[in-house]
Image (cartoon, rainbow, N blue to C red; front, top):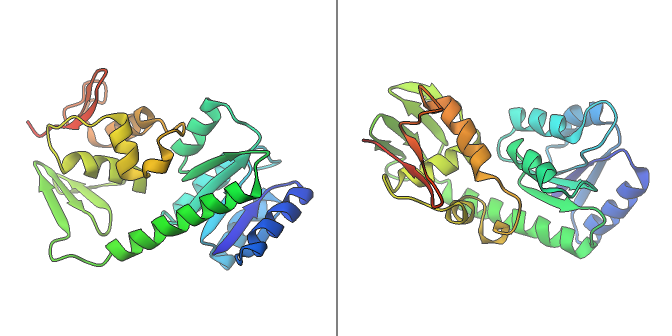
Length: 231
């Protein structure tokens, strides 16, 4: 894998480079967050490792800029900030994983390998199927391109937002729990992480509902989970 680290601590670069290269991965480090996007464009990494607390641009801002350019690249936050709100914010900005400093190098490698396996599965499943679209009520999903149209109008969803809504749309009127959605979209290994499905649901509603406060399509079953309604 081609690994890119954005962190303003030189000694941390030495550590992560050693861990990555010992496992046969390529490594590129960026110490100034303002240069991160240009390096990202030139290097085209498979995974980006981001600190949160950095001068100029913080990790959240860098993550959003990367996501605007590439919705598929893996983004992992490596931060000393271990509180649940920090993790929730990272995932809501587009993170795929979050590891709290200090951590064992072996754990970082396991996370990288898990991301690599997921990427390979996604590529294997991305071959166009005989039917790429799913029509549910007023919605039309393209599962290959991960695009959505509502009444013929394109709706801009992030990859995770699309996957959550698509997963629910596959079983209209069926309530799925937070745990079922996390397992379906992120994988079973993320069940214990601080992924806030409620944050994703709120953002999806802002994009598909005429009145997000009174949702017609993406409904909450209190104490149970969420469902996609076409009634």
